[in-house]
Length: 317
Length: 284
Ligand SMILES: Cc1cc2nc3c(=O)[nH]c(=O)nc-3n(C[C@H](O)[C@H](O)[C@H](O)COP(=O)(O)OP(=O)(O)OC[C@H]3O[C@@H](n4cnc5c(N)ncnc54)[C@H](O)[C@@H]3O)c2cc1C
Ligand SMILES: Cc1cc2nc3c(=O)[nH]c(=O)nc-3n(C[C@H](O)[C@H](O)[C@H](O)COP(=O)(O)O)c2cc1C
Ligand code: FES
Image 1 (cartoon, rainbow over the protein chains, first blue to last red):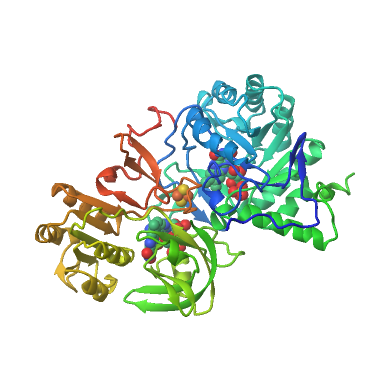
Image 2 (image 1 turned 120 degrees about the horizontal axis):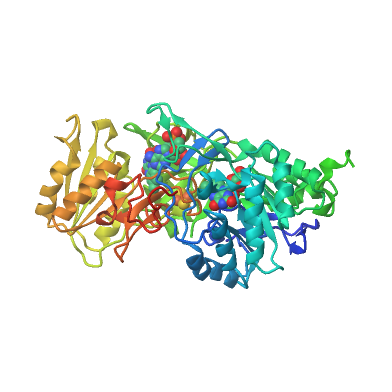
């Protein structure tokens, strides 16, 4: 039996700008493929939204294995954005999701500014796609592999170009990297360039060395660190951005494992959350975390999720 | 359909250098097919080891006193496998399964050779039963580095026409590798299919012998997995498709059983240049 959220008296609905969701819990890009596999465990139409694996213009093999190393309370991954390319993705994955009636946020990526625009352009008028998440935490092949999200100008260039290639009504979420000196600077820059919301955070760059071979464990040498180990970093990023941009819709993520973790993100300022690495441990996690969050709010006598969003900032206000 | 089973440990038995764990898992027996695996959580929901560990299903039982149960064979050698080996009766255990594509069975009742390396023998016993039920002759080969690491000799003898044993150090059976005896077993049994599970190097060698004899091989691979359910893309291998094109396929959902001649063994751990979506020279 597929798990679905329990009924409670707590209003768990949330808003990201004009978009409304019945649950604030989403999947995280790259940790749920395109929803089909998870739908064996949970009814994916009952979670807030499915955020799909970042898709590029062309099919992509990704990196050689080993692509993964386990780390304390987390993991390092270097998948290298393996995927079918946007056309195949629309034909197979998106049509399945829309037929199911799942709310879908499509994550897109590119090797250069133009590629982001081309991928986005293909997503015009595709049913079921409620927003686009722009994964700018990938390397720019035209600028010595410098990650777009680490440079306010490159990040803004991408968002600007995507904005020009999609209909004005589709919200864009820029996904930010925590590997920067001041994440609010990048946040402000992409919002100015046309991002309607922010997804915070992507993985942190890390390395694991095999103590037998004395070589990096991943074939790509470095990889992205995720899981509960990064949660305090993620909560801090959400908090700083909320403070700098009081009204911007934020999807918070990074190491969320249970309802209490989710509540930290909401209090820091997230309007919704994505659950990534935890899904590998518990394929039912998105529904479970929804239930646990609702239960905690109910115990506290809180009637609506919206009451705790940004609560951690109240002394500043 | 795989589900999350919150079960309990029924028994942990030491067998040679392995541990056989029996756990309750109500629905696994009725969905199970030979070659499926389970993904076991390490520790509770606060554990710092987030990733599940994959184990071939050795046996299932749906009519025991405990309801449905599943058995796995664990070779302890790291934090996750040590944790499982140290579990005690009545401890909680969380497993997801049945996972993975099972072995494909021949349509005709043809002779089959089953080759198990170390704990890789685990999934072959239920396979042997399924083959026997179809009228296939089954010949077994078990190999390991040393006698203690052979698994399931008695059982293999019981359900096979012949059993051959090899060890690297000669402590049991023929001194050498499984592939030293495989050609002979294929010839004598008139085998049409070879099934194998064990270390990658063994699978490669078995697959080559099968191809040389003009017969099909089904190999169950072991690639590092983060999710086991097909959502993360960590477990990929270069596999040649029906259309002749190599793709990086997920061994957790497109495998773990693959046709041996479709796996590009020498290029596991690389992206062969002609792979679908391979990087341009100097690209990603
Ligand atoms: C389909 C499949 C079936 C398997 N069946 C069995 C079995 O029947 N009996 C048995 O003893 N073992 C089996 N294994 C191997 C078993 O999953 C690993 O030995 C185990 O995950 C190692 O965990 P560890 O913490 O003890 O070791 P570590 O080496 O510390 O593991 C660290 C990380 O690497 C991964 N990892 C390390 N080695 C392997 C490996 N060989 N295969 C997959 N992942 C690995 C782990 O999942 C973990 O995330 C199987 C693996 C797969 C993929
Ligand atoms: C295996 C894996 C693959 C990922 N792939 C992507 C991706 O394609 N695009 C993206 O924007 N983020 C990707 N991420 C990052 C996650 O979406 C998320 O931002 C990050 O892992 C932090 O959340 P978590 O700790 O809950 O996993 C990936 C993470 C993992 C672990
Ligand atoms: S282990 Fe995640 S896709 Fe296979």
